[in-house]
Image (cartoon, rainbow, N blue to C red; front, side, top):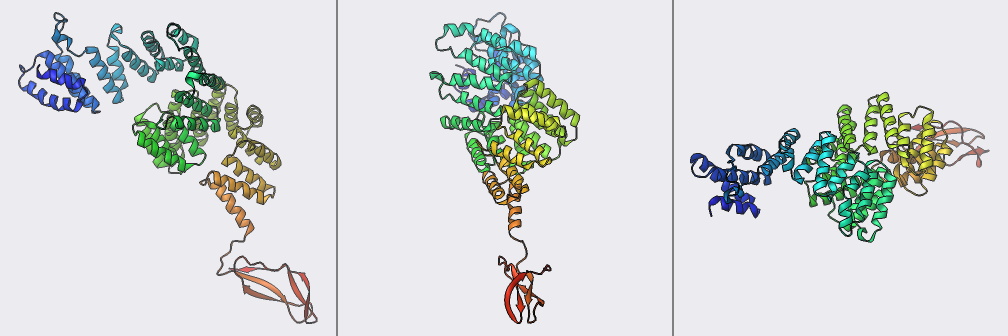
Length: 571
């Protein structure tokens, strides 16, 4: 047993740091004495050294210092393919795969594709085809990506991630299901798979309601009850459909079943932040960081806390960090785009929202962010074109109708669009808010109050309570307005508009004057009948004056007369 055999055994048992240290000593020795190792031994040593660097996350060193040199020293195996020595050699295909992995870690996707494309089709293993499919998809090359995914399914018909990849590339659900039919018929307890494929086909076509119904039917099956993955998918679908209440409930249910759940927690944190529950968001972020800081979700959750605390620079940093860990994180792109927009860097924000749309063409939040950027930069025409495209692509539902109405709010047809949206979903908060805005412009406060009370009948939302408070103030219902502002502040203590509403009401109720210099001018009757004199006196805050003044009649104070019209304060 030679030293290379020892290196190979340590690599097989996972002692990568030991492999790195020993190979770091042996490689310079082989350079100083070329006869120390045979070509096949040096080839193996380079591969094991590169593998140890890869496990230590030194991807550039692994690619440059080791893997790039293997092609120069790899011995020819044409006449000795069956010898024990040649059988110990690492596969050239495996070396190329490892090289491609290094390139992907270094964000050099084109080089990774070039390396994998150089492997003949017959020699490509399922993991090579899967990596190629994902790289093609990321590069926007749909046809080769579909071909590679299908090749994965041909070899491994239960590769569910490959199925999702095909569905995301608009391959029909029936076609994908046909590729798994043989395994469904031959393997027991797989009758749920065809329904699962059907559900995610609806997901990727943007048909959220049918996707929700199909997944709910799956969840009711005894074998799939309390399935965390299905609950997470349901929560995400409710979020896409604008049903934030049910989305939060499903996320909480999934968390109870799996306290270490990370997937989807970025969306959950975003929903909590929107509701003003910043303390819960902070606790969620800390818990996720304790689980893993190598996923994008903890950084996005912390970024949402910063964003809704109006610390946009910090939110921008955290969003960028999340993208660095996962460049396909839609929530990270939305967070960074929103932070850039609020910092006035609209053009950079537009780039991030466009990338989010390319990754998630059925997520309405991506389009809303982009349209807000267009409106912020007065690009009304571009905003209208985008809103119309969304309306045509995703259909006439409450969300797309409201989005279209938002862009053309000055147009009379906006009211018709919002009425259609509220007919479909009377509790859709964004539609209610926009309709209330129109009614406020028309000063139809009673109609607005009725609309808001109806929307708040089965839900509680800070914005709705605050707007209802504004409408009640407009009709002089001050006490009830104060109640609504108080509810809004209790739901979101950081909502500045609700806090300002409370302050306005208090100023209306109690005059705000400095105590130390508060001077009241009062009028007092004196000796002669019907004569008055002015007297200036200090009074502490909170004391009230009498509603009338005493008049002297014949030297006696008797009848109370109205106060003379002249009164003043001195500061």
